[in-house]
Image 1 (cartoon, helix red, strand yellow):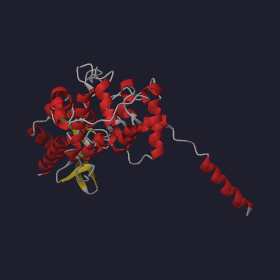
Image 2 (tube, helix red, strand yellow; image 1 turned 135 degrees about the horizontal axis):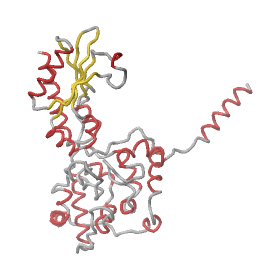
Image 3 (cartoon, one colour; image 1 turned 30 degrees about the vertical axis):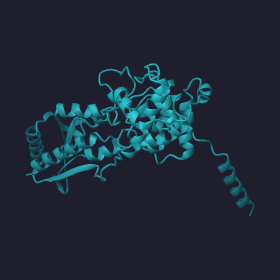
Image 4 (tube, helix red, strand yellow; image 1 turned 60 degrees about the vertical axis):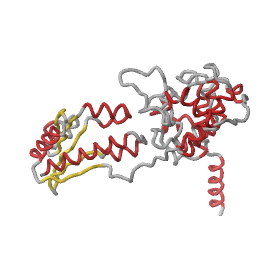
Length: 346
């Protein structure tokens, strides 16, 4: 009886003294790959900019982490608990300067005319954010050097943004701009507060036409095809078919090359690498992360059931990337892979 009592007491104390979520560690695991370990940005926007942190409230940050931006690179994080998200937000706030002064600043209620705002939006906002609020294209990451301007213009018609951003946050951004980004103060550009209220009302009207992007149906992570030819013949057939699709053969190598001494390598596992540089450049401009899986490759291997071809399915990656602009390119590449493997097996 006493033993059971102490076990229950120990469990109770363990629950009550459980450590609070580590925001820095959670940020590192869930955010740093895109936003940088110190919030300096990368594929994702910089988060350590004082102009950004001063402008957004905790609700905006919480909703953005939880729901993401459907189809706009920023994924949702449904597996994080509310406490974990709050811990990440607290970590972000550690980069902020003059926090107390900023949070006290208030503006009057937004009460604008959306029709007037539409005209103003066309003259002041559409050049960066798109005529229909669709935002900039791709991620804004340059391939040869760090980018000087830290963000691509966000999509203002995205349901994730509209759900996260309050009218006051949008208004404040327009009035003050965001230091360190291309976003300038509209007050300094000559607009008055009523003009800005009109623009806010027009941006809010995007809720009626917001693009609710949904990923395509679940896809297999890999594409496969059987071959009636030997490994050597299948490899040659793949090369011939890829060249016929305007791809250049990069190299052919054993799958285990570099992992084992040559004499110990399985000669019945071969990878064919090929590339269409025009296609890849277009895909990279939409999302540099696709470079992790370039150049294109098809693996040929033999087991007791025969010879097979296998490659990663780009349409599966499309779901992972959460980038609607990549959908068409990924579908096109999946079709090309399938056609090459089918032709190689004829």
